[in-house]
Length: 198
Image (cartoon, rainbow, N blue to C red):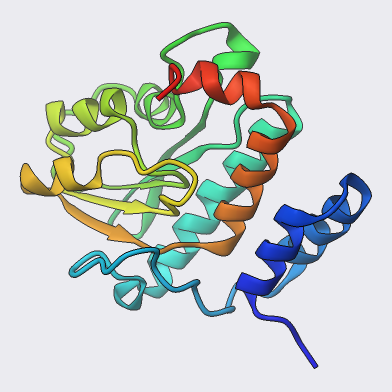
């Protein structure tokens, strides 16, 4: 008998350190076609049911960026910018690695994208709901669509983005949830620093 992603994440978050490593390896090795966790609250038009194959592909790439940051000792938050089915830029949180307080995953992705005349035709994928700084950057450059991996570990500013006309898709990805939760449990001080105690 198998386990649902929700059961795996719950067991992972309650287990001992050795058990946690086992669960993380198991969760990360599951096929990417597992159904999403149910939303923590009713999410109206931000529902994972609207996720396309391209969205799944680019969210996986963002998760790979998050994993890369985690393996470097940084916060596991990744981002991908895509346009017309192609990746324009990738990035991940680099606050720890570079000692840069504003090097969030989305900011790193924007920086790696370089200068563009317009951003209104891109979709930004991020493994964690954007903070106010990253949300402001999204608005500043006119990004019209954002796909968010999860908002369980940090609620971020989805409502704010929507109130400014940004289409937001929350996919509630169990891999994003599990990796971020693991990091918070392992490094509560770095997490507190990243969100300034919020």
